[in-house]
Image 1: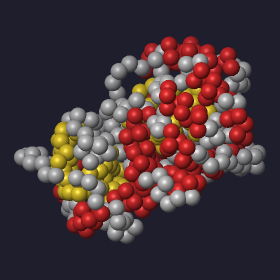
Image 2: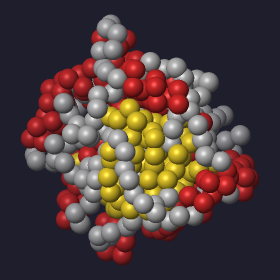
Image 3: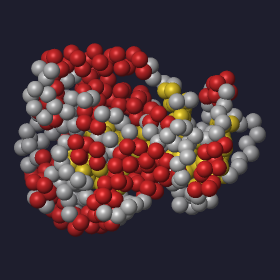
Image 4: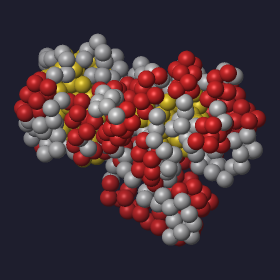
Length: 459
């Protein structure tokens, strides 16, 4: 069924919610449940949207999506007044510094100098704590898959701590093994340590897979980044790198060089590309390299206006990200989608130059495909894993909203995310996190960053 204004408004107006006791019963039900009576946004072109529909989940997978599902004996969650959809996919998130939220500059200078000073006193425990805080916020805001861009891997202990925290969270994603912040551009990372890490933690299965975040051609010497590329590919690790973020680096033409030398491909994600040219995006499209943008932080750090109209026109595989909490302030994919759509309209000087549904695709199935997870998540399709969220459509700021696309990209906010399930496991119920002691986590984060900022002398 098409996503019509009339059907959407009728579903939202129905409202309704389960009693607390019924919620608890269903939350304890375990392996099988029907999410019933929602406006279902599948993000699957074959299934489309259902103005009123059910999603049947069994053993962590989506068993069926239909207007009505009869499943005798299976618990049913009343999802009237909600939009049930695939969880958001964040394609590039520096989680290690999450506890430094709101420190984009200090008495030492802007972002890079402040983070550089903090990195010198950082510990593996601080990185793990930051990952825990980041992923709690991810779940709260409906992000069910995230790539952890771990670019403060001072020693292997940092990687071990971050990966352990990421896997313990139960959130799906990728851990991209990185480099020390202080590593000089002409020095290669410890490839032997990377290899040991990959051998120890790689392999099939699990919610968190491995990758490598590299400095790439913009931030390291030619022989260095090429050597690191070879090492990652020998280990079959997907690569992600910041490229063409600012005008100076874009002028060096790295994307064309990478294409010429066979160093792009589906296993190489380009991040930002704020000042890349249309011909660069065409080369990425040809090679199959996905792109991740984070418009909020690209503006905040001073990279400039991301070339969203050219990116969209090229057809390159797109994903969105919150990037980091130091600059972005909060993990809010709704805000990222709104800014992405509106920047495109402003730059093109044309309303709805980038349709809301296209932006929603980038935040879900596009991001999943870019991370190589499109066969598992990113849309609600039978056989895929049950990474599902429910967004309230009957709240003060979400009703009436005209269309579901506008609701999700312009009206909703993390507070409207009522329910989150990852791989069939409930992480948020009735608007509250079910697996995190938020008060204790926040207190630990505040105490830790206070100690580290004093040690680094950035206050």
